[in-house]
Amino acid sequence: MQVKVLFFGKLAEAANQRFGAHQVDKDHLIECPDSCSTVAELKQFLLQKQDALSLELNKANTVFAVNHQICQEDQAIQMHDEVAFMSPLSGG
Amino acid sequence: MKKVTPSKHSFSYDLQESDFDLSNEYKQLCIGNRGSENRAESIEERRARNRNAGAIVTFTGIVREFLADGRSIHHLELSTYPDLVDSQMMSLNQQLEQFDLDQVRIIHRYGKLLPDDQIVFVGIASAHRKQAFSAAEFSMNVLKSQVAFWKKEFYSASESDFKWIEPTEDDYESLKVKMD
Image (cartoon, rainbow over all chains, first blue to last red; front, side, top):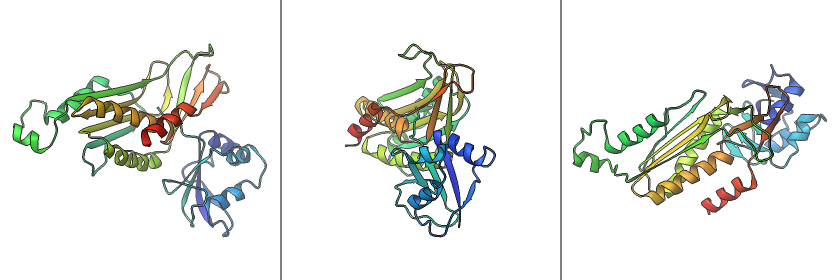
């Protein structure tokens, strides 16, 4: 199934290395197995490759959002959802 | 300007690349308090709107130039996720219901910022100072570690001479204390 996947902060840099900067934008679609029914399962799918992105994604402080709402890893996902993987938030 | 309703107080925020005018923001809070620039409303109308602030607290965050470790900042790059910020601001507005406020105004900038540039503005109007100070501090603690911004600190013009900034333990702790 296709989901829109976004990366932010340090994760965006690592995602640029894997997918190419031109690919990682607001319309970045990823084809993942239909068995990916939660954020955690989508994360596992992305972790299959050993690179900087996997290193960053594996950090305990990664923040997740589905359709613009912060969530936990066990959040269910569906086709065409917008899933965001974010490094720790740091405003102000 | 994005207005979020409903709430007891008025709440608006802007996410913008451009700078903001501090004196104008303060003036708008004053106008919001008395209803119009020339005080055209009657006292009954003002009373009906329940705008009776005796305190306006403003906070402005600016880019520091010198760090404790001796390095200096060349510039910052702030990135954001506007769709998520929208929902987080609605949530912040709901959390601010715990205070007794009249008006809340927030501006957060993104993009490239230089030392001494303004990054963030929080303006609170409230009947009494304690609520205004507390709400301003609470809002800043949320913005520091709970809203979708990412800060990259550059130490020279070189593209590779940077560090990603993460919230400190203090930022998380401040938030915990206020939310308890």
